[in-house]
Image: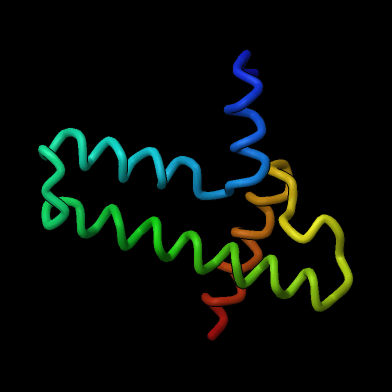
Length: 87
């Protein structure tokens, strides 16, 4: 477990923290040339859209907390991917 309380809070509140950090790293590594990081930005955008959809759905269903805790997120992603394979 990490020792940085701010990092733990961020991970709890932001399920796309890894993607966000990768976008920052990409920008830094490419001298802040946004065109070089298009794929990383798209991945971050897709992540945010996915978790926003989950948050809205949980709110509609009356499930609290609206943003699932980190320990439930892998299962939610797995369930979503499995449901997409059936289509």
